[in-house]
Image 1 (cartoon, helix red, strand yellow):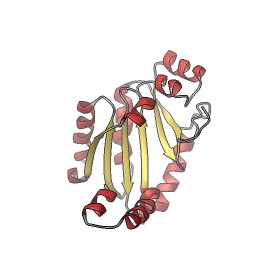
Image 2 (cartoon, one colour):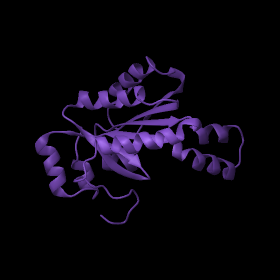
Image 3 (cartoon, helix red, strand yellow):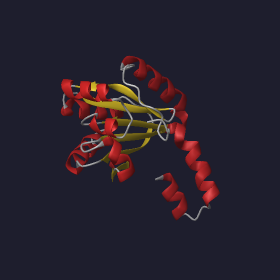
Length: 183
């Protein structure tokens, strides 16, 4: 959204790239998947981990840390997973913007937007559909929440992310860095 606003204002490409790079540390990304099946098919996790997720019928929660998707926990039901996404907004201070992305659940994304609008400025909440490049790995039912924090709270955002990673860590579920050629 920042890049689009700068482009619309007539900024040159170099300035837009600089600004996007500057705000990357402000981003927090949370992803709720319906299944691990598509991560397995895309070569992101092994068959045993995908099978374990299917047998337990859990909904994996992932976060982006240092450009890598890492486990943030599991939800026993879809509703509990969506509740965890909503709680991420309520538990995070100094949010500048929120984006909700989905693969195949626009009604669910809109419902989450309405809930978030009860605690955050509706005009700074955006909805989008996941594109095919990400959708092939996330599969149907994927729901993501992206938070852009204000600059003054970056240090706090980093420490909160580390604490959350320790609290909800699942070391047995390893996902390689995105863009890695190792499948």
